[in-house]
Length: 120
Image (cartoon, rainbow, N blue to C red):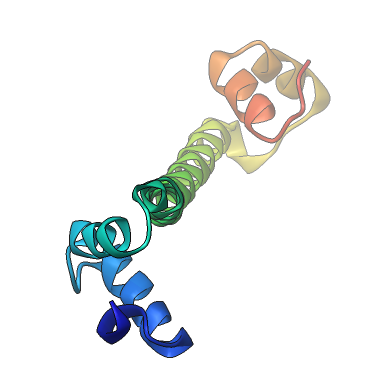
């Protein structure tokens, strides 16, 4: 046990190895249980559980953030294409108030206004 947990540096190395696969955490657990107390299983298992959940949470956060960014880009592209299509239907490239009011009733215009948080 002194070779594994003999000082602070070795103890930190053992904790690091247990979390990141350098050594199986059960090896360290058996040493603690056999040489100190069977009750050492409780804090050791809590440490391993907390560490693994923290790592998994960080990885999940990266994936979720990437998905949200991709979704945001897709929505922006859809909005630009939708608005481009709307304005390509304007005759002579000129819009007046009655034409704008008629376009407000179209589903494409409703989608565009909703996308920029302007609802009728």
